[in-house]
Image (tube, rainbow, N blue to C red; front, side, top):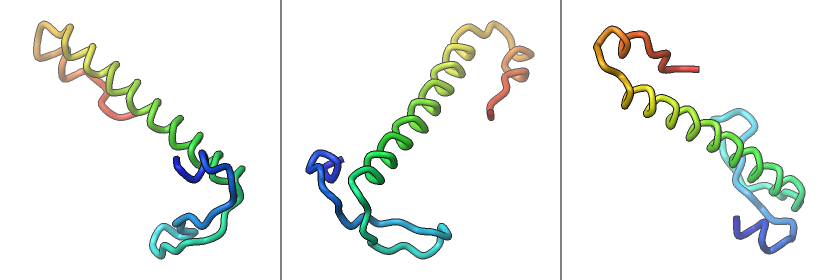
Length: 72
Protein backbone atom coordinates (compact mmCIF):
# COMPACT_ATOMS: atom_id res chain seq x y z
CA UNK A 1 0.00 0.00 0.00
CA UNK A 2 2.92 2.31 0.70
CA UNK A 3 3.96 2.05 -2.93
CA UNK A 4 0.56 3.31 -4.07
CA UNK A 5 0.57 6.14 -1.55
CA UNK A 6 4.01 7.17 -2.83
CA UNK A 7 2.29 7.57 -6.23
CA UNK A 8 5.29 6.47 -8.27
CA UNK A 9 6.49 3.48 -10.26
CA UNK A 10 8.37 0.89 -8.22
CA UNK A 11 9.76 -2.61 -8.17
CA UNK A 12 7.26 -5.13 -6.80
CA UNK A 13 7.59 -8.86 -6.22
CA UNK A 14 5.62 -10.88 -8.74
CA UNK A 15 5.47 -14.21 -10.51
CA UNK A 16 4.33 -15.13 -13.99
CA UNK A 17 4.11 -18.85 -13.25
CA UNK A 18 3.29 -18.93 -9.51
CA UNK A 19 6.59 -20.68 -8.75
CA UNK A 20 9.45 -18.28 -9.37
CA UNK A 21 9.17 -14.84 -7.80
CA UNK A 22 11.23 -11.76 -8.58
CA UNK A 23 11.09 -7.99 -8.20
CA UNK A 24 10.06 -6.28 -11.45
CA UNK A 25 9.32 -2.69 -12.35
CA UNK A 26 5.61 -1.82 -12.23
CA UNK A 27 3.82 1.39 -13.10
CA UNK A 28 1.72 3.16 -10.49
CA UNK A 29 -1.42 2.13 -12.43
CA UNK A 30 -0.35 -1.54 -12.27
CA UNK A 31 0.26 -1.26 -8.53
CA UNK A 32 -3.14 0.38 -8.02
CA UNK A 33 -4.84 -2.36 -10.06
CA UNK A 34 -3.22 -5.10 -7.95
CA UNK A 35 -4.31 -3.36 -4.74
CA UNK A 36 -7.87 -2.97 -6.06
CA UNK A 37 -8.02 -6.63 -7.16
CA UNK A 38 -6.73 -7.73 -3.75
CA UNK A 39 -9.37 -5.63 -2.01
CA UNK A 40 -12.12 -7.17 -4.14
CA UNK A 41 -10.91 -10.72 -3.45
CA UNK A 42 -10.67 -10.03 0.28
CA UNK A 43 -14.16 -8.48 0.35
CA UNK A 44 -15.64 -11.51 -1.43
CA UNK A 45 -14.00 -13.90 1.05
CA UNK A 46 -15.16 -11.86 4.05
CA UNK A 47 -18.72 -11.72 2.72
CA UNK A 48 -18.77 -15.50 2.22
CA UNK A 49 -17.40 -16.00 5.74
CA UNK A 50 -20.08 -13.72 7.16
CA UNK A 51 -22.84 -15.57 5.27
CA UNK A 52 -21.59 -18.94 6.57
CA UNK A 53 -21.28 -17.60 10.11
CA UNK A 54 -24.85 -16.31 10.02
CA UNK A 55 -26.12 -19.64 8.70
CA UNK A 56 -24.32 -21.52 11.49
CA UNK A 57 -25.65 -19.17 14.18
CA UNK A 58 -29.23 -19.73 13.00
CA UNK A 59 -29.03 -23.54 12.76
CA UNK A 60 -31.27 -25.54 15.06
CA UNK A 61 -30.41 -29.10 13.99
CA UNK A 62 -27.62 -31.18 12.45
CA UNK A 63 -29.47 -31.80 9.15
CA UNK A 64 -29.42 -28.09 8.35
CA UNK A 65 -25.72 -27.91 9.22
CA UNK A 66 -25.00 -30.74 6.78
CA UNK A 67 -26.85 -28.88 3.99
CA UNK A 68 -24.63 -25.79 4.15
CA UNK A 69 -22.63 -25.24 0.97
CA UNK A 70 -19.13 -24.51 2.32
CA UNK A 71 -17.35 -23.68 -0.92
CA UNK A 72 -18.40 -21.36 -3.69
